[in-house]
Length: 202
Image (cartoon, rainbow, N blue to C red; front, side, top):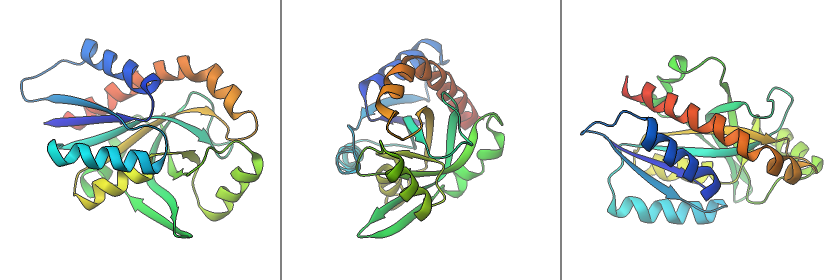
Protein backbone atom coordinates (compact mmCIF):
# COMPACT_ATOMS: atom_id res chain seq x y z
CA UNK A 1 0.00 0.00 0.00
CA UNK A 2 1.31 3.42 -1.00
CA UNK A 3 0.28 6.11 1.47
CA UNK A 4 0.90 9.77 0.62
CA UNK A 5 0.76 12.26 3.48
CA UNK A 6 0.47 15.92 2.55
CA UNK A 7 0.68 19.14 4.55
CA UNK A 8 0.98 22.79 3.63
CA UNK A 9 3.95 23.63 5.83
CA UNK A 10 7.19 21.93 6.84
CA UNK A 11 6.27 22.72 10.46
CA UNK A 12 3.21 20.50 10.00
CA UNK A 13 4.73 17.78 7.81
CA UNK A 14 8.19 17.13 9.26
CA UNK A 15 7.08 16.24 12.82
CA UNK A 16 4.51 13.82 11.37
CA UNK A 17 7.12 12.29 9.07
CA UNK A 18 9.63 11.80 11.91
CA UNK A 19 7.01 10.40 14.26
CA UNK A 20 5.69 7.86 11.77
CA UNK A 21 9.14 6.69 10.73
CA UNK A 22 10.11 6.23 14.39
CA UNK A 23 6.89 4.72 15.72
CA UNK A 24 4.93 3.03 12.97
CA UNK A 25 5.62 -0.72 12.59
CA UNK A 26 6.80 -0.81 9.00
CA UNK A 27 5.89 -3.71 6.76
CA UNK A 28 7.29 -4.67 3.39
CA UNK A 29 3.89 -3.99 1.81
CA UNK A 30 3.62 -0.42 3.15
CA UNK A 31 5.33 2.66 1.75
CA UNK A 32 5.02 6.23 2.98
CA UNK A 33 5.54 9.29 0.80
CA UNK A 34 5.40 12.87 2.04
CA UNK A 35 4.54 16.01 0.08
CA UNK A 36 4.64 19.64 1.19
CA UNK A 37 2.03 21.39 -0.92
CA UNK A 38 2.61 24.97 0.17
CA UNK A 39 -0.15 27.31 1.31
CA UNK A 40 -3.29 27.97 -0.75
CA UNK A 41 -5.57 26.00 -3.03
CA UNK A 42 -3.84 26.90 -6.29
CA UNK A 43 -0.40 25.84 -5.11
CA UNK A 44 -1.71 22.70 -3.36
CA UNK A 45 -3.66 21.62 -6.44
CA UNK A 46 -0.66 22.09 -8.73
CA UNK A 47 1.82 20.25 -6.53
CA UNK A 48 -0.40 17.25 -5.83
CA UNK A 49 -1.45 17.04 -9.47
CA UNK A 50 2.20 16.90 -10.55
CA UNK A 51 3.03 14.31 -7.88
CA UNK A 52 0.34 11.81 -8.88
CA UNK A 53 1.40 11.96 -12.53
CA UNK A 54 4.55 10.01 -11.68
CA UNK A 55 3.71 8.34 -8.36
CA UNK A 56 1.17 5.72 -7.37
CA UNK A 57 -1.06 6.44 -4.35
CA UNK A 58 -3.52 4.04 -2.75
CA UNK A 59 -4.69 6.68 -0.27
CA UNK A 60 -3.87 10.34 0.31
CA UNK A 61 -3.99 11.76 3.83
CA UNK A 62 -3.93 15.53 4.27
CA UNK A 63 -2.80 16.69 7.71
CA UNK A 64 -2.36 20.12 9.21
CA UNK A 65 -3.95 22.97 11.09
CA UNK A 66 -7.31 24.71 10.91
CA UNK A 67 -9.20 27.57 12.49
CA UNK A 68 -12.45 26.97 14.38
CA UNK A 69 -15.56 28.67 13.03
CA UNK A 70 -17.77 28.02 16.04
CA UNK A 71 -17.60 27.17 19.72
CA UNK A 72 -18.11 23.45 19.11
CA UNK A 73 -14.37 23.16 18.50
CA UNK A 74 -11.71 23.89 21.10
CA UNK A 75 -8.06 24.72 20.59
CA UNK A 76 -5.79 21.67 20.14
CA UNK A 77 -8.75 19.39 19.33
CA UNK A 78 -8.68 17.08 16.33
CA UNK A 79 -11.17 17.56 13.52
CA UNK A 80 -11.98 14.75 11.11
CA UNK A 81 -13.66 16.50 8.16
CA UNK A 82 -16.62 14.60 6.74
CA UNK A 83 -16.99 16.93 3.74
CA UNK A 84 -15.09 19.77 2.09
CA UNK A 85 -16.41 23.14 0.86
CA UNK A 86 -14.96 25.94 -1.26
CA UNK A 87 -16.22 28.69 -3.51
CA UNK A 88 -15.43 28.23 -7.19
CA UNK A 89 -16.69 30.83 -9.67
CA UNK A 90 -18.92 32.29 -6.95
CA UNK A 91 -20.60 28.93 -6.32
CA UNK A 92 -20.18 26.90 -3.15
CA UNK A 93 -18.88 23.45 -4.09
CA UNK A 94 -18.90 20.37 -1.86
CA UNK A 95 -16.96 17.11 -1.94
CA UNK A 96 -17.96 14.25 0.33
CA UNK A 97 -15.70 11.48 1.57
CA UNK A 98 -15.63 8.42 -0.69
CA UNK A 99 -17.51 5.27 0.30
CA UNK A 100 -14.44 3.31 1.36
CA UNK A 101 -13.20 6.17 3.53
CA UNK A 102 -16.59 7.14 4.97
CA UNK A 103 -16.91 3.58 6.25
CA UNK A 104 -13.88 4.27 8.48
CA UNK A 105 -15.48 7.21 10.27
CA UNK A 106 -17.36 5.23 12.95
CA UNK A 107 -14.20 3.25 13.75
CA UNK A 108 -12.07 6.30 14.51
CA UNK A 109 -11.75 7.83 18.00
CA UNK A 110 -15.00 9.35 19.24
CA UNK A 111 -12.99 12.18 20.83
CA UNK A 112 -12.20 13.50 17.34
CA UNK A 113 -14.77 16.07 16.26
CA UNK A 114 -16.63 15.54 12.99
CA UNK A 115 -17.90 18.22 10.63
CA UNK A 116 -17.45 20.05 7.34
CA UNK A 117 -14.25 21.90 6.51
CA UNK A 118 -14.26 25.10 4.47
CA UNK A 119 -11.21 25.94 2.35
CA UNK A 120 -10.53 29.64 1.89
CA UNK A 121 -8.41 31.32 -0.77
CA UNK A 122 -7.16 33.81 1.81
CA UNK A 123 -6.29 33.61 5.52
CA UNK A 124 -9.37 34.01 7.72
CA UNK A 125 -8.25 36.46 10.39
CA UNK A 126 -11.32 38.55 11.15
CA UNK A 127 -14.76 38.02 12.65
CA UNK A 128 -16.27 39.50 9.46
CA UNK A 129 -14.69 36.79 7.28
CA UNK A 130 -15.56 34.12 9.81
CA UNK A 131 -19.23 35.15 9.96
CA UNK A 132 -19.51 35.24 6.16
CA UNK A 133 -18.23 31.66 5.89
CA UNK A 134 -20.63 30.50 8.59
CA UNK A 135 -23.54 32.13 6.75
CA UNK A 136 -22.76 30.45 3.44
CA UNK A 137 -21.76 26.95 4.59
CA UNK A 138 -22.23 24.48 7.43
CA UNK A 139 -18.46 24.26 7.98
CA UNK A 140 -17.13 24.08 11.53
CA UNK A 141 -13.53 24.95 10.62
CA UNK A 142 -11.46 26.58 7.90
CA UNK A 143 -8.15 25.82 6.19
CA UNK A 144 -6.50 26.82 2.90
CA UNK A 145 -5.75 23.57 1.01
CA UNK A 146 -8.00 20.58 1.73
CA UNK A 147 -10.72 21.19 -0.85
CA UNK A 148 -8.21 21.40 -3.70
CA UNK A 149 -6.60 18.12 -2.63
CA UNK A 150 -9.99 16.43 -2.23
CA UNK A 151 -10.94 17.61 -5.72
CA UNK A 152 -7.87 16.00 -7.32
CA UNK A 153 -8.49 12.75 -5.45
CA UNK A 154 -12.14 12.75 -6.51
CA UNK A 155 -11.20 13.27 -10.18
CA UNK A 156 -8.60 10.48 -10.04
CA UNK A 157 -10.60 8.03 -7.87
CA UNK A 158 -8.01 8.09 -5.08
CA UNK A 159 -9.32 7.63 -1.51
CA UNK A 160 -8.80 10.85 0.45
CA UNK A 161 -9.06 11.74 4.11
CA UNK A 162 -7.95 14.75 6.13
CA UNK A 163 -7.05 15.29 9.76
CA UNK A 164 -6.78 18.79 11.21
CA UNK A 165 -5.79 20.14 14.60
CA UNK A 166 -7.45 23.37 15.72
CA UNK A 167 -4.85 26.08 16.35
CA UNK A 168 -6.94 29.28 16.36
CA UNK A 169 -10.48 30.62 16.20
CA UNK A 170 -10.24 32.37 12.82
CA UNK A 171 -10.60 35.95 14.04
CA UNK A 172 -8.32 38.92 14.68
CA UNK A 173 -6.38 36.86 17.25
CA UNK A 174 -5.74 34.04 14.76
CA UNK A 175 -2.09 34.74 13.94
CA UNK A 176 -0.98 35.18 17.55
CA UNK A 177 -3.00 32.18 18.73
CA UNK A 178 -1.72 30.01 15.88
CA UNK A 179 1.91 30.77 16.72
CA UNK A 180 1.36 30.17 20.42
CA UNK A 181 -0.44 26.85 19.95
CA UNK A 182 1.43 25.36 17.01
CA UNK A 183 4.11 23.28 18.75
CA UNK A 184 1.78 21.57 21.22
CA UNK A 185 -0.94 21.17 18.57
CA UNK A 186 1.46 19.33 16.26
CA UNK A 187 2.24 16.85 19.05
CA UNK A 188 -1.48 16.07 19.25
CA UNK A 189 -1.72 15.87 15.47
CA UNK A 190 1.17 13.48 14.84
CA UNK A 191 -0.13 10.97 17.41
CA UNK A 192 -3.59 11.17 15.86
CA UNK A 193 -2.22 10.57 12.36
CA UNK A 194 -0.65 7.34 13.61
CA UNK A 195 -4.02 6.27 15.01
CA UNK A 196 -5.67 7.05 11.70
CA UNK A 197 -3.19 4.98 9.70
CA UNK A 198 -3.52 2.05 12.08
CA UNK A 199 -7.26 2.15 11.49
CA UNK A 200 -6.78 2.25 7.71
CA UNK A 201 -4.79 -0.99 7.91
CA UNK A 202 -7.44 -2.71 9.98
